[in-house]
Length: 252
Ligand code: NDP
Image (cartoon, rainbow, N blue to C red; front, top):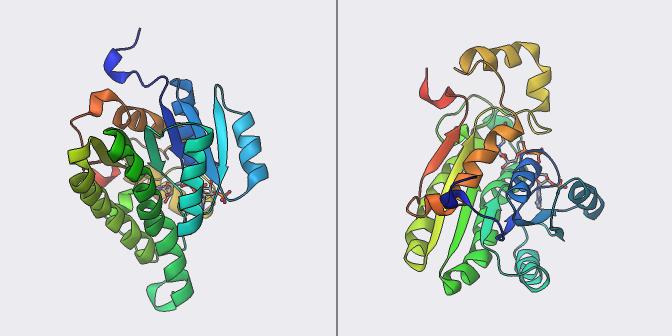
């Protein structure tokens, strides 16, 4: 039997960007832990297919996390259809790789909106309700690039570094109202987002050499951290980023 501190059954969780990849794996983990789960993305068909793969009580919410009015309507609709949100995982994100001198204004705004503004918009709408009810857990999916950067991904790292500070700011503002806000920082995980890196044999081998665990991460590797941060075991944990990276951020 699991310890009651880790019991999150019966809670309602929204995971943004959960039509595939890390978001879908986290949603599956929350569903397996007994949560009612709401999947989010921009494509209704993709979400319906993803929902059919998960166990338990699973719902979908189609909205673009970068659009303030869609987010507002989307969160209100989720609470009306499914019930009060106990857990929010801000996971939706994207990567654009290009040298900084070639990065366009449009791409800068796109990556900033998708990776950072989205967490502010969705977090604010969820926290309006959570702070009123006096409890809630928010997990922002940061990155090992919240701490370190390589050539060609400066804008991505800037969004993820800022997301770390937004996490701490949310903790400061909403902590007094019973809402804990933390980050989870994945290392290199095999998904659509990293497909070009996985397919680059030289880079892929570098990741394996550079990671103390000696391998790429799998989406399932991230589930335990999110379940912990969403559980009563983390009631006094807030403003932290838990790096789940096989040790990569700790070594040169
Ligand atoms: P994927 O590209 O596989 O998945 C991204 C998800 O986000 C999709 O479900 C996509 O759904 C959704 N999404 C993108 N833009 C929007 C939007 N505007 N509104 C709603 N949903 C959106 O990425 P990963 O699973 O690899 O990454 C998930 C998160 O983890 C990201 O924040 C990423 O930065 C972070 N991360 C990933 C790492 C990795 O190695 N993979 C490492 C560190 C952090 P749809 O297109 O259907 O709308």
